[in-house]
Image (cartoon, rainbow, N blue to C red):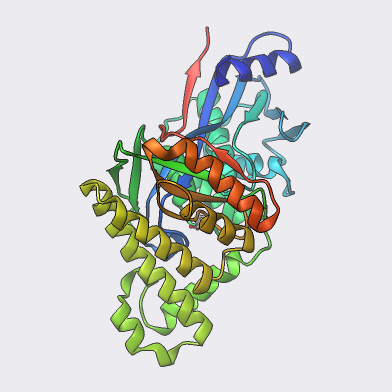
Length: 380
Ligand code: GLA
């Protein structure tokens, strides 16, 4: 059964009759460029073939009624009395609220949501849910879909409704991802340039099995430190600084804030260079940049964890690995590794064994392919 068929079957288990459409909304993995997006810097993510799927049909009132297979529960709300709350329904309500703020006339809908993006694994299951919900509204309400605008809208929903001051990376790659490519995104002007994934390598996602929720965590605090640094150094965002300027003005910053800024500035440079290396097929150089990125996230930005560090080391010592690093927000979730295509099978087995030997936890390999952004299909 295809994922779309599974969504239709899940619909049939909860509703009489047929859905009128299915929506497909991908997760993402970030190759390099973490905690740079909200500093108006550069990121290099790819949308993946792990997706949120929604099977749905319009209603003739203003109610949204949805079953989530993963949460094993219903969410139901009226578009005229949205309520702040927690859990997965908050993402749907936050997106509804932002769409209503645009003055759009929204139609209610009912359906089911299924997902094979493991939540909390650093693969952006929340952005996938947000964009999927926005697309569901577009399908039933018939408004025009503009991917960048919709990504920004979903980011606002997460910032204002859910309370995580995330950057734009997750929503934008979910909205605009491309098959077999990563995208270099300039998070200032939101322009995107495709970066090839050389055929001789595979991108392997290694889930540590550890989780940390971003809400109420140090994520917002990290962002504040970056904004403090930019202000103290007299620039609109850390994107506008080079490392020499940072060093020359170091005495203006608290030592911790200085290290946060150093990570962001160096990570932006690494992200740009990584794109060039991928274009030139310079895999050894690309792998080194991933290493440096991990060390910087671990020591300067301090968003790694024992499990992420152990998984990175385990990956590096396994066959065919050019480089490995934690990916996404941090504190738990997954690592990403660049691995010679011929060595992938041996790499995966050995990396998980080494990880288990180091921390006593069972990690998982999540096979992925770069895929396209959110889409829908009408059913007859
Ligand atoms: C989370 C956020 C993104 C980004 C990453 C770190 O995934 O949602 O905006 O900041 O962390 O790169």
